[in-house]
Image (cartoon, rainbow, N blue to C red):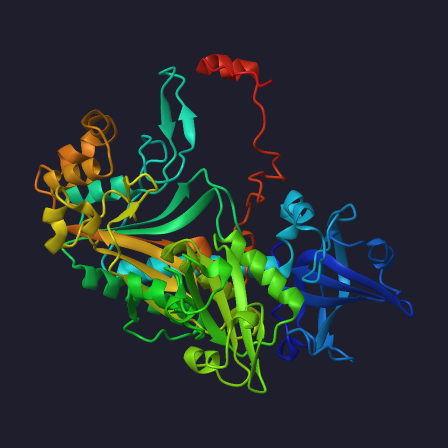
Length: 572
């Protein structure tokens, strides 16, 4: 029979009502002859009371953690109020109790304080997801997804799907390949993004498209990245870069307001890529705190510091009081992020101390602009970009260690004015975003003459030091797309084989178009205040790319491989 209430719903207004509840046994206590059961569902907990004269008393006494039960009873006022739960002022005196299923002792605790290892939690993910904190993450994810969808529909967008089985195209990461049984030796590729398909929707004349899209990239995992992920994929025709950004701002404003009751300050600040790298050492800077970077070569070139010679020196000043152990940890962090060394200077009672103090003189304090209590942290590296990046990682780490950030403070910024290309060590070029990004109108003529100077009509939306989404105005002219492919070194035969359909489609009156993809998993992670993206994905992979619950990847039957005409090389 249908239950009347959920387990987080009852209160003193329900006293004397007969109710029927269902759920899991969270806890059972036998006190002075009375059996107390905390009945749990995803909404909360209700305390049940079973009296000794109750015919269900023996059954109640036998209940164990995670048994599934149904109970009917009368709501009464609770003698000892529990102010920690919404139902803490009432309890239900049971008159009927039904056991729906038994449970073995769970290998993890079904509570928010569970301290099981992550691998154990992932192995028993179906139990881990019973924990209230995990259910809250996924419920919040649903609310965020629906708010985004609602905002885009109000903006006049249509929700369309794109294929999962597509063509392998070079987009920056490794493809997941799917062998074809019908065409032996040929493969589909799982989409790294719906990029090409959504552009073809624009070619077809659907001016506003979005999709909550599953994407796949065969990359090394980290705390905010998984092999398969979800992005809010958005594309529109006839809008300028500015108009696209304004649309995304309205979507974000609606979502944060509806789900968190938080009002984003609009318009969102814009920061050129070059300024972001110079001030913060990152193309996804956390603007919730200062600690801005500066270059110090002009000062230190006057001193004979051996490991500074012919190096780039960048750093920042803080009031941090760091121990030697902490400085050693930060040094390892710098080296892990391609910096070569970390040096520091501290001014205490007007005197300098630190790892390079012996190289300095009395004029150093004024030259460096230091004041009492300042700690100058200096990252040394081989070039501007790698040194800035290492200093930026150091800055972010120190901001968190010093408590300069709050998870409930949301600081957005647009990173704009990107270079169109990145240069490889051998001098060749790769697309800084992807090869469908349009150069700025004033730079299109440089694609064939001096592509290194091209700037892109690209933009990233950044939140609290994380890239929340990236987008661009796309190339809509066939000859410009051809020139872009050639600039990144693709031969004509490769262009025809991999992208012939796109280049051909652009010849048939393609409108100017552009868009953006928001990382839904990362967005939910930030909006729920967790540091680990696995918390907001129902069934994630480990850092070593394994599904411990399903035991995947796994071997398959020889008959399946035979059908696909696949065999493997044996490794010695």
